[in-house]
Image 1 (cartoon, rainbow over the protein chains, first blue to last red):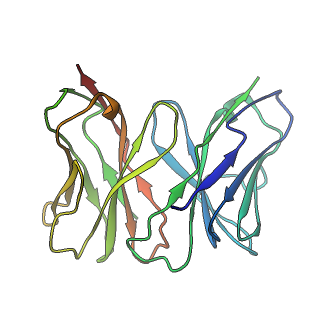
Image 2: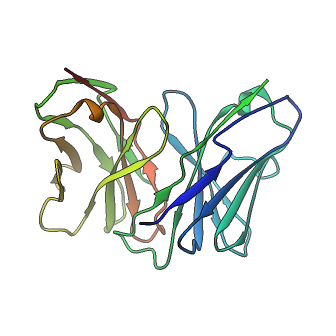
Length: 118
Length: 115
């Protein structure tokens, strides 16, 4: 089955630094990837939709200059948290689909990345 | 816009018994899909079951079945013969068929299976 690899699984950084999270589709080409954010004991909130070769579409309230998304190839999307602050500490999880977005086209999720900003 | 409501923040079930996790939704889209995902403590999202809005029959996948009542806009998940490994967070999600698989999640239900 389709596999999405997300790296790193855990990262701790100092306030003010930038952190890059990678999301790779290992055995399929992902035309679209989605980035979600999950605070402790809360649900997943969609941050942005990443389309290969074009600019990401951000959800309302998500700062595009702070959360940089790049989808340069059909197998890789990256999320960079720039100038991270403690309030950016969260669980970030990506998902990917391939081909035609039919109703039953199930998304494959990465294992998530837990970011802690000190 | 879509909205998913899961009214049970936490549920207990005895091992080997069945349990129903509630999910109601709201959407203005005539065609949509409903999903259930399991999230264990490790964090990954595991797909369990899918129901299309025009599917005539309720979806089933092994021990998972979906009680879909379109008129009531509910899509409850039924887990039969609960196992200790079923203890996890469970999320209901909706995706309009014209939204390119963009999922809107409910708040989740934490299921705890007692031995």
